[in-house]
Image 1 (cartoon, one colour):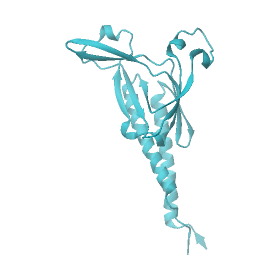
Image 2 (cartoon, rainbow, N blue to C red; image 1 turned 90 degrees about the vertical axis):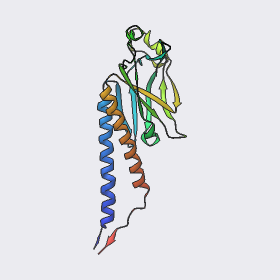
Image 3 (cartoon, rainbow, N blue to C red; image 1 turned 120 degrees about the vertical axis):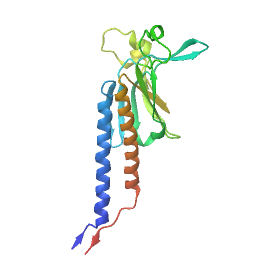
Image 4 (cartoon, rainbow, N blue to C red; image 1 turned 180 degrees about the vertical axis):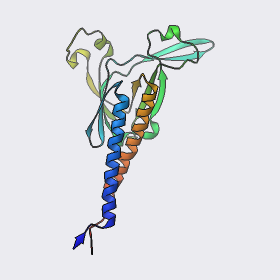
Length: 202
């Protein structure tokens, strides 16, 4: 009478645990990102992120010779398709910026930003598929609904992007969950690609 060998049972258990842990990490990302947009799984190892629109205008102060100058930029992304295996977990970082319209007037040297950016970059040779839009057009639209063509939405691929969080703790939780999800995805791939044990017999 044949039975599965112990090694085959352990192989299946490892794959199951990795899958459950990955699902938990994606859920943790969903919870952390709820205040900034939406995040859903669109495959076993891919997520779709849809930031809240319009994207905030980020301001970054630079101090030199007793004067403060400002740089302004935005990440007008309506969606990012993110295969977790393509993310470089070592490059996931955080940065603080200001998004208040009065930041340049009220800023005091050394003051921390009111918004945290989580920066995500791909492994060498990989890009993420995104949908971009014209932020100025979007802001000046009247009451909707509106078609995506009205605010200049178009597809693009990028090597890196940033997600904005008004809650610093949520940003840190998201970054930690993303790192864990990427590592679990790699572990799943390693298990799937390793030689599977064969069934044993008594």
